[in-house]
Amino acid sequence: MIHIENVSKYFGEEEVLKKINLSISSNELVVLLGPSGAGKSTLLRCINGLEQVSDGQIRINGRQITFNKRELRLIRKKVGMIFQQFNLVKRMSVLENVLCGRLAYRPTFPSLLKKFERRDYELALHYLEKVGLVDKRNARADELSGGQQQRVAIARSLVQEPDVLLADEPVASLDPRASNSILQLLNRIREEEKLTMIITLHQIDYAKQYGKRVVGLKNGEVVADMPTDVVSVDDLYQLYEDTALSSKPQEHFREAADKVVHVHA
Ligand SMILES: Nc1ncnc2c1ncn2[C@@H]1O[C@H](COP(=O)(O)OP(=O)(O)OP(=O)(O)O)[C@@H](O)[C@H]1O
Ligand SMILES: [Mg+2]
Image (cartoon, rainbow, N blue to C red; front, side, top):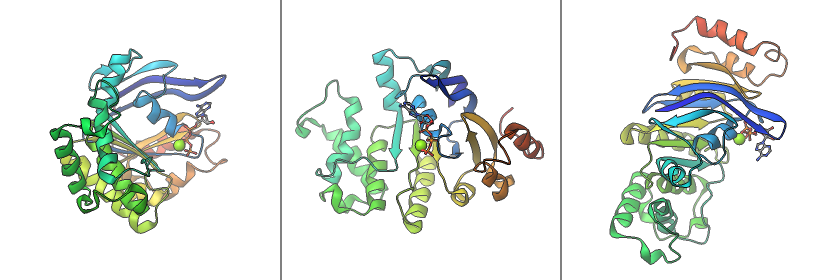
């Protein structure tokens, strides 16, 4: 469960997130849409404690994100994150990359991979199996295709045994076939592992296809929050238009949202 209450974030004078309020239930999948610069990545970074909010609070399963180092470690462990660029260590093997996800469980960074324990290996192999890459465990990360590298990144986040998985444009570097397969995999994993998931996307058709709930962010504000099956592609495209929504975005989407059952009060 993620609770975001009145969250604002400033970078210098610029208010990048403006009083965001959102509640996301356990095991829910939310697709976060919005034009470049809307604040999507910043919001995700606030949720996993990479950025400190300027105002308001974020709670994950009741635990508030603070900047106490110990608390932050606990939060980061429970919030996995994957990125557009996979962020693997290219020269390391697939298995070693996945094992890196276990570092959150180590008191200090083990410079020797030998320090991983049996359970770490078991988990790494278990999740590599789950993402369909156990046969590639000894391959170097940079020998894999983009889609395969993203699968490794997913396995690396899963060995953290997170409650929440945040995916920041996970398919932006992939072709349509690999994109579909990664989004299907994420959805399956969410169900199997009971994860709460937020995925940012730029592709509206994928948002419609894979998301159950879509949240639209524009200029740091939530301008849409509704079930995906009732929002039209045209409405979603409006998020990306400078003119149509720039004056009164909330009103526009509120009208659309009033026609449907609200996801949360
Ligand atoms: N570390 C930072 N320092 C200063 N400004 C920042 C920083 N990170 C983000 N910003 C600014 O915050 C705003 C929101 O950026 P953010 O990366 O969250 O947008 P986004 O919705 O993820 O965009 P995109 O779709 O291009 O990834 C932008 O104006 C950006 O320039
Ligand atoms: Mg971004």
